[in-house]
Length: 471
Image 1 (cartoon, rainbow, N blue to C red):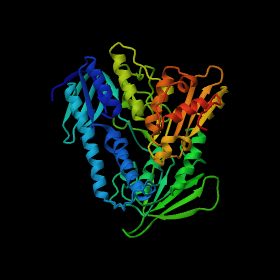
Image 2 (image 1 turned 60 degrees about the vertical axis):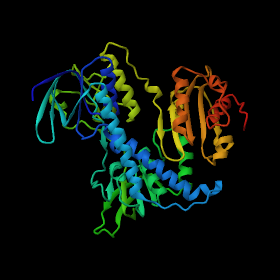
Image 3 (image 1 turned 30 degrees about the vertical axis):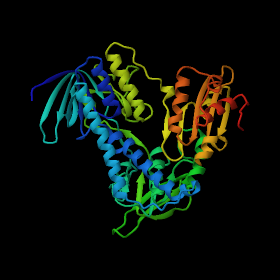
Image 4 (image 1 turned 180 degrees about the vertical axis):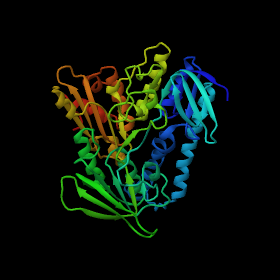
């Protein structure tokens, strides 16, 4: 096929890639997108954020019908129809990925399906499934290829018995027992799905805590809530072997050892979810031949404008340093497009919210208490439990709390942490406040509708000055 010339070619159409493409097109650039999958949206829309949230929501409703509605005077006996639930998940994926196709057409973005390789600066070769190649000439090239599942050496992921997050979204029946390796966001979310649907769930974590990197008080309280829900934890432990069942009716044996030494334990299970994290996906891009620099974790090194050490080649999202979050990648995509257009694109990395979409949810933005102590920052903490919130009581959703951390001298809010219902939605209020440099007093004096869950945020802000009203 004859050469095609573009202002910007993006390899990868996940949240970072497709958002970058749309913003660049809005700014008048001729844009191409190269995607290895048959559908756009990357891991997030196809096998990550979106399908997992579909199953999280559906399984939460199932669990509520089984165990929570009777307390509200509603007597029901739900029956699980797993194929129908999986169809809902698939329909959700289809609706979202077709939406990306529509946006590409609307913005006159040219899409190519196949493996993209940067043959040299200013040139991308696309190899389709049938082996045919297309060469794209491009003034600028953006790598937005996302990440892949991190694996445990010696343990094969077959997506049947030993699954990654991808396989855990496709199980044909509810496991009797699922062993989850890793107590991070993905492990806890997907473990929650199958626990609600009837599986026994055991989480094995190398560290002495769940949710590494999050505020310790939040993680500790959240673990207690999950234990009440029936999830078992083996912290400070490691999986040293998996012996797969020799027949469909047999059990897979998982060997677990204490991290600091001691006797091994063997757990029999019929499903193992490996969720120890993700690694940048840069395979087959031709970066080594081009001399594109990476750090010691395999991430592409970029400057503040997202440019690599090779002029004209940029990178965003999971392949560069920072949180592997879809919304972080989106912000970088917008910033890159605006920078290329001569504008002042910028990402505030101090205010990237993080959410765990379990029930209750966990949401956080800004500094943790541990980070503030390490920095030697003088701060005050205000906390308010949902147990004391009128709307939470009415909804029978009283687990969790809101914590506000503020600078002791200036009162500027430095961090907000929420464990509770709708935490992922409520964290937006805190993020906006902090983006504008707001204080705990600003938050405390802002009128919040009553009765709402967000009143707990106001009360936590009041608590920084020891003047809560409802506690």
